[in-house]
Structure formats: C-alpha cells, structure tokens
Length: 390
Image 1 (cartoon, rainbow, N blue to C red):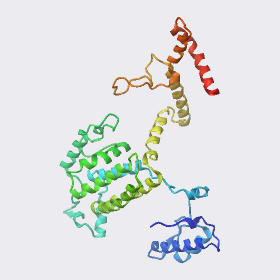
Image 2 (cartoon, rainbow, N blue to C red; image 1 turned 30 degrees about the horizontal axis):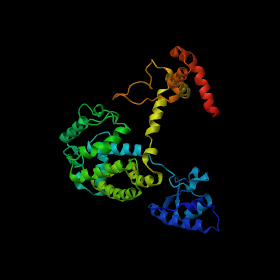
Image 3 (cartoon, one colour; image 1 turned 120 degrees about the vertical axis):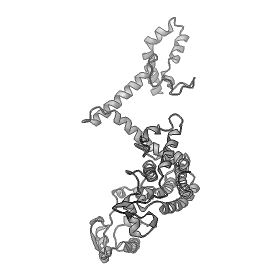
Image 4 (cartoon, rainbow, N blue to C red; image 1 turned 45 degrees about the horizontal axis):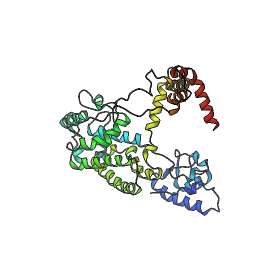
C-alpha cells in the first residue's frame, strides 16, 4: 500500500484541510497496529515509536508534537526527489546469495533452515513433513527437499571448481571451497555476483526438484537483467509483477526464517531502476575498490588520515614522474597481463618525445638525442604555459 506523506510537511494549522485529511487517513491505517490491550506506539517527535499510549489520544498527540520525519526534509529540494533512498544492489545480491547457498548447502553457519525455523512451523501448524520429532532421547530434523544431499553437494562443488573463467572475469573459486567439501568460505561480493547470475541456475538444475530450480533460476535471471548496461522501463514493470510470484513461490519452498529484510528489498529494485536508471552507475563496486586502495596507503594505524593523505600525494607524484622514464618499467609502458602483441600507446601525446625531436630535426641539429635531453624540460614548460594562455 502506498501512503501519501505530503501532508506531514504542511504546517499544523487548523485551516489546512489537506493536513487534517492526511491525518485522518493515517489514523485509519494505524488502527491495524493496535495491540491486544488497545495500545499503540506513537510515531510523533516526542515518543519516536518507543512509548505506547491509547489509540484515542493519538490524534491530539500528533497534532501537538508533529510526526517524526527525517532531518533531510529541511532541505528545500528533498521533498521533490523521487528516489530518496538508493538501495545498493551489491550488498543485497551478496546477502541473498549467501542465504540461498547457505540453505541449499545446509551450511550450519549461514543456513536459514535452523531448529528454531522448524519450531516456527510447528507453532503455525503448517508443513508437517518438516516438523522436528523425537527419536528416543534425540531431537531429529527431517531432510528438506530444498537442501542438497551429501552426494549432490559434492557434485555442486565439483561443478564450481571445474568452471574456467576468462582472465579477470572472476576470482579463483577453488580457494573458497572447504577441504571437506562441506561449505563455501570467504565469498566476496563479486564472487556472489558471478555465482548468482552465472553458476547457480546451471549448477542447481539437476540437484533439486524442477519447481525449486525454476524459481531460483527466475530470481537469478532477474538479477542478471537488473545489472544490464541498459534498463527498459517496460521490462522492469513486468519484472515487478513476476517478482511477486517468485517470492510467493519461495515462501512455499523455504522456511519462514529465510525471508529477512534483504529478500523483501528485492521487491523494490525494479522501481528504483525505473527512477534511478542502470545500477552500474549507482552500486558500490567502484567505491569499495577505491576505499580498498586508500586503505592500502595506511602504514601508521594511529594516524590513518595522515597516512592516506601522504600515500596519495606520493602515488600521484610517482605517477607523474614515471611518464618520463623510458628505460624503466612503469604502469604506462609495462606489457599487459595477457599480451596479444602490438597495442596502441597508453601515454598522452604531450609526454611523447617525438614532437620535440621533430622540432630539433627541423632546426637541423647535429646530435638530436643529446640536445633533446638538455632542452626538453624548458621546451615542455613553455608548451604547457602556451596551452594555458591559449
């Protein structure tokens, strides 16, 4: 249900019909949150959803104190922004992938199929085939159809290990497989990105039932569609409808503990893609990589800010100076990791020595290399000054 919150920004004035109409609509919705004793947590600025009072006093309480709202609404443009909160697909995809893999692999540390999740099914009286039962002095947990058997788990790990990626496409997943083939360890965000979009739909196909596989595959297909270089509005509108069906099917497959806030946030991703555009200009991958680079500058843990500033200045200075080193291997003249032969130069034209040597050739200098070494600095300074003046 979409609630119109524009009335909360209006001054509490008795002559404002829009404020009173919005308040009355809010009170009708708030009645569904009253507990058994007739109390409700007040969302005003004074109570902050912590103190509970009678429902009858809610209207006067909100009118006196006003609703709790973000401090960003004090900005003049904030109320007009359509996309106020940007959900990061990188972290959502990582958490969803961890939940899926942990539950499928029955990982004792990351699985959502815990004993407490089974007890919830007993309290609700649903899915009796998954209820815990006692066998003598032991509490037994029946095997679920959404978890891999021991043989299927080993097949999945062999599939993960056997995949060969193009250079730089993904990390080596062999190091993430435990020695006893029981779980995946130390998966990074990009590892989960690759597994979610490329490996999981294929690797799970023959290891679980068709109903479970098709639902997981559709969720992975949506993730791949969302992370495309271009986003079609009609496709996102259709994906929004399909996600509702996908989540309903997941509720019939996995236990209730599987559906945390991260699973719910997936439902809002198509709408944010329509408002914000492609996710590759909004996700956290470039920022996380750059923060890792700044973190590597730290040499003195007691002064991290100074270490970062000093390391950044040194790196920029060395990068500038390395453009003039022809007989030393630098980041500008080093061969590529996969050298396919001749490749275009990666240096700027202003740092090429050919332009100065051509001028010396026009001047008919006898020893061009020696004159180039002695006069290049002054020539380069004059050239930069002329560029700035022009």
